[in-house]
Length: 156
Image 1 (cartoon, helix red, strand yellow):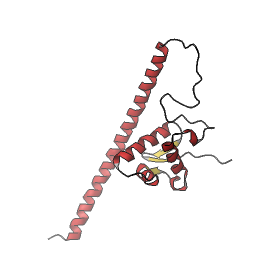
Image 2 (tube, helix red, strand yellow):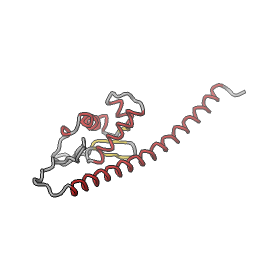
Image 3 (cartoon, helix red, strand yellow):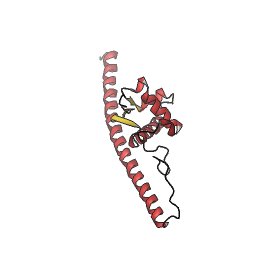
Image 4 (cartoon, helix red, strand yellow):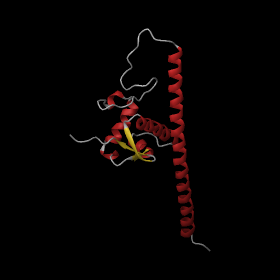
């Protein structure tokens, strides 16, 4: 008869293998999601451009707000922009990643804990989408799949 500890170890090994397999699947899904989000943004940009062109020449050309995109809560970052231009949720993400805890990079679950969010899939995935948007707009870096960190700011 197998020992209880042996059975537990075997079960633990199976669960660890399943977790590893699921993590690999999750990374593939995240990559596909990111690509789909970029595709959607290109379509939205194209639709807005076509609508503007079809509307005819404007009588007065309005100066766009610096760094902003139509309908975007996250403007493209320029060197002279501070995180204070971001919506509060995005400011908090940048702040945590810029803190000592975020220097080495954080996964979204770690980021959720640091932001005192409930660590459930819906919250973590929402946070992941926000982090990816910050990466796309130049506010933070994705150092490897699923790991985000603050921008390296040169001293001086």
